[in-house]
Image (cartoon, rainbow, N blue to C red; front, side):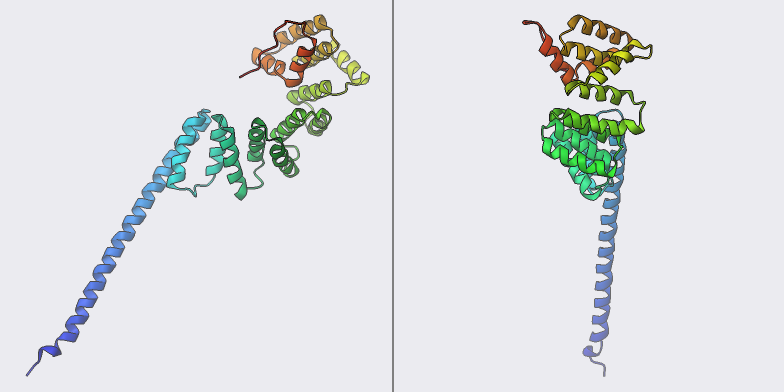
Length: 278
């Protein structure tokens, strides 16, 4: 005679096996769904990143930042994300936010001197001169001749009323890049801002007599004339500079902080000062 109890153990085991198989199937479906969703998020992040890169290339900083913010939500581990956000924010005029993004990037990439230069520029614009000094000076130790670093730190020294140090920084750069016209101009203007020696005055005057005198050199000569109270001579030099340079280049040179200060010093009472660029 066969009892029911004799069939119970095999039936129970089968039930457990089927239950485990069912649970494994559910888990497999869940894992498949999870990775499918993850793949979709990563794919969308890649598409948005491509669109953000295109926006950056078009200098559309605001659009790029909106796209990159969504990328950060979808895939915060995207390589170079904070670097792109720093650039996008800088292009859109969000200097404080750009500095924050630059610092986030530099935590993992301390040798990225390009973003260090951007951080310094953002801090200068926010008038955090101490922070800018630290960021730029540290990066300059890594890349002593990087153009953006030299430009930003020399400009900071000028803003700190330390033209001699600005000139020294530019000299180091020009020793390796002697034909860089932008830094030749900045070097001369740093001299104009400081104590201009008779030897240097004569050298500039002699250079202005030559056929190779540049627009920048004429602007420097004009700044010296304004400084000496020779307004007619200064304006003649500016006219000559205007014949050699584009309107945009002239605007850039004439809005130089130290050139503006010399114009203000020598202006007759009641004369309007040159308007700064917005």
